[in-house]
Length: 473
Ligand code: GLN
Image 1: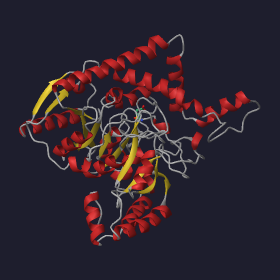
Image 2: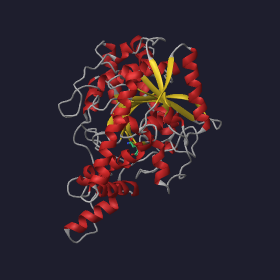
Image 3: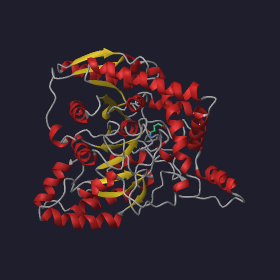
Image 4: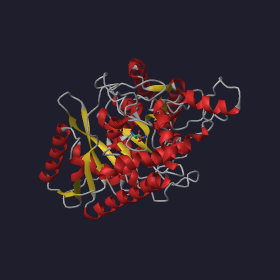
C-alpha cells in the first residue's frame, strides 16, 4: 500500500481520498509491533500519532494541511520532544523527560509531520554499532546477527525495516552515513549550521549536526526544506538562505555541468575489496555516462581518526560535565557526602565508552598535554579543512566508499575500540571540515550485505548532493 512510495505520491493518494492518514499510521505501528526483536524504539507514541492523524486528515480534507502532511517520522533519542522521555541511550538520563521541543521538532509539527516515536542509539551518540546503548543493541534487519551501524542505528533500522518513512538522526563523525550504508538506505548529513542544534543533546558541539534518513531523495528534500535555516536559539545556525529543496532536486544533473573527484587516499589499505570494486564500478558508470571524474588528493586523510577522536572527546568531556546527579536524570543512592554522590552517579550512570571518552578528553585538555594533543588537533583540523577547500577548487563533488566494510557481527569489535573507531575513516573528515555529505546505496557484498557510496559536497550544496545521488539510484 504505502511501502516504497515517496511523500509526493502519498500526498496525492491522501488528497484524492484513496488513502486515509490513519491507515498509513496503523501500517507503521503494525510494522513496529511485529518487529520488536530489532529493538529499535525506546518510546512509541501510538495514541498521539493516531490522534494527530485524525486532526491532519481534517486539514487535508479542507485543503489546509502543511507541507509534510502524510509524513510519518521517527526521531533519534538525542533530540528533545516536550513531555517525552529523552534518554540519549544512557542510564544517566533513563528517567528524564524533556520540558521543551527541539527547533527541528517545532518545525516538523508546524508542517503536520507525525512523529511516531523515539529510537534507540549509542549512548550520547558515541559509537559505530549501536551496541553502546543502555537499552541494548539494535539488530540489522538484513542479517539479525549483525550490527546496524551507529550511533543512529535505531533511526536507520526504523526506515530500512519500514517502521516509518523518514528518521531524524544526528552526526558527529558519521553516525548517519555509516548506519545508512550498513542498512541499505540513504542518509544525509547537512553542512554544519544548516540545521539548528537547539534541542540536540551536545556530544561535540563544533561537530554535531542533525540529519535525515530516507529511502528516496524526495522525502529527504522535503524534510530538509522544513527543518533547515537560521534559529535564534542556536547561535551557530547559519543565516544562509534555504532553497526549495523539493523543487531544486526535481532537475537532473547532466554531464558537462559538474566535475567529480575521488581521493586516492580513500582507496588504500583497509578497504574491503568488494566495496572497492563496487565503488570503482560506479566511477566507471559515471564516466560512461559522459561525466568527468578526476583523481584528487586529500593528503591529511591519514590523520583524520586521531584528530577526530582527540577533538570530539575534549568537547564531550566538557559537555557531559552537566550530568552530575544534581540537576537531571539518574542520581546514585550510594553516597554519604557530595563528592561521593558525584562520583557514584557518574560511575554508575555512564557506560564504558562514554567514560573512555570523558577520560581521554580530560587528558587532552589537561594543562600538561593541551599543546601536545588538543592544540595540535585543532591545527590538524585546519589542514584537513584546507585539503577539502583545495579539492573543491578542482571538482564539484568527491565520491568515496562510505565505510571500509559492510555490517560486522554483534560483539565482534567490542573489545577493540580502535577497530571500532576505524569505521569512521571515510566519514569523520566531513565533520572535521563542516561540509555536507550523503550516503546512497551502492550494492551488496557476496553475503548480501549492503554498502553505500558517499558523495561529499561544498558547504551548503545539499541540493546538489541530492541531485547527484539520483544518478546512482
Ligand atoms: N562513530 C563515531 C563516534 O563514535 C561517530 C559518532 C557520531 O557521529 N555521533 O564518535
